[in-house]
Length: 360
Image (cartoon, rainbow, N blue to C red):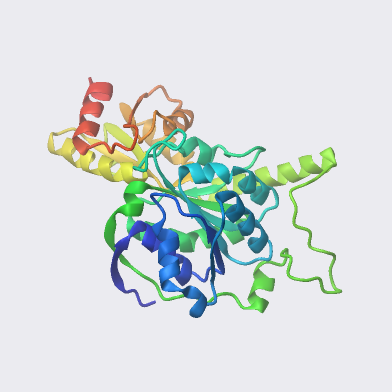
């Protein structure tokens, strides 16, 4: 597969990947710091080359419901937004999960609560991995740490979404969305033909032949017993994700006395802090989460048994640390360090927190 070297922003990479991965439709609404996603799509005019539909909806509520309608036909349909906009989409997301409709949602996080700031944050962790909307459901959640991963994860997201008939969330933040880095692009994947769509999404509302019953797309069930059976089916699906689809990266964890756990842009800062610590003779490793759901519980637990302390680095008041503590449960000292309001911590601050909170 030919790969071309490009220089672009993370948001632009998301848009280019949507086109290259054979996405059929994008419905969104502008909000800082992710507006370049739709701006890039509009500039590229994929409707002239691939036939991809790109539409600015009148609101985030409208866009997520347009995703529902388009994706219910078995097409690859996506949206993107930032924290307050994703909050508005929660009802639609629980409907999508409840109807088992695959789709792609991108959240380029900013500071909150409320409208907050337009600078980077990671305070949407709870919203992303604990459901966000009502009911017992999960979004498969990928956390890119580079512009290259912003691009590559779009392709991965479509594979997971249709494999499990589930919405997939790419959880980024304003730092990665706005930063510019080199990346290698891929050859374009052709959009599915009608025959391929029917084969890949036999459940879709693409017309009823005489050979099968109606395909009904809904999340409504008035019979409690049948709803319980359906919920058990969902939990079995999420358990399969936990067993087969966990992704993480462990760096210098083999001989580490201490580890830093982080994801996204915080993991990049933590990597430099790890290097600085090792230069001082402190054996520090980095455990980077790539999937936030499913969480790499078993893998982190195995490493935690061998270390003296864990520092959780996240641009929030401490959300990820709850899952870290649930995963480890071995008595190892575990503390949180983070900055708020769009302030990005420095590697020096992370190292200082490690020394003061964990080592001393």
